[in-house]
Length: 121
Image (tube, rainbow, N blue to C red):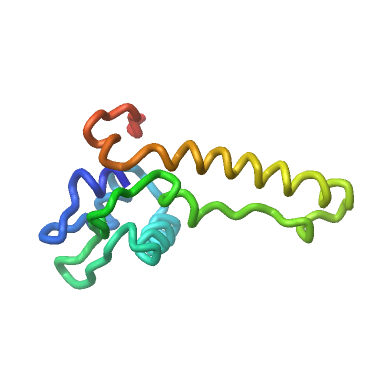
């Protein structure tokens, strides 16, 4: 997301191949991620020879908005053991809520203005 935010625009969107090459990502997995972010309105996708991805909103985008579509927590039906089915989902939901609450306070622009995370290895 930071790479798309830094380098992409409507006039010059970032191609999936650019992201794959720069970060060594699996093309199928990356495409699924980009498609999901586009469905959420976080990214916009433009097709064709000059197509690619760019940030889809002028509104504040927070990290919880980026992570939430990918967060799937198990439900009690996912467990065979009734003890796990009763105890684990509430704990996981509470932990997830705490994580998303913390991520909601961090917006994409603040990471661009003050880079605090280095994604390159």
